[in-house]
Image 1: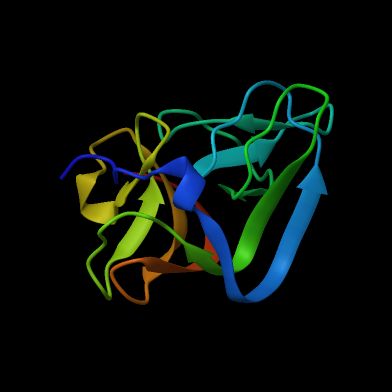
Image 2: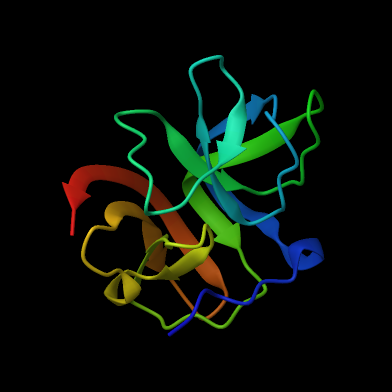
Length: 133
C-alpha cells in the first residue's frame, strides 16, 4: 500500500491533544507530513531512510514556511483526510509520508506515528524505536 493520500486543507487537530509543539520550520513543510527537530532547533521533513538518532519527531498539522511557524503533534488525535484501516499502526514512510507499518522494507527505520482509531483519525503516539528493519 502506498502512502496515505491526504488533502492538507482537511487536516486537523482532534479533540484530545496531549503533547504538541509550536516551532520554526527549517524549510517549507506540508500539512500532515512527518517532521523532526534538527540540531539548530528547526523542524524539517524526513523519511524512513534517514537515521534521525534520538531526535523528537511528530506530525505537522499546519503548513510551515522557513522562519514562519508550524504546529507539530507528538501525542493526541490527528484528523486526516485519508482512508486508514482501523487498528493498523502507521509510520513515517520511505518517501516522507505516512504509511502502514507493513510497507516498510529492509533498511528502513521504524518511526511509529500512531494507530488508526477510525478510518480518518490517527491516535498519534510517537515512538522512535531506533530499530532499522
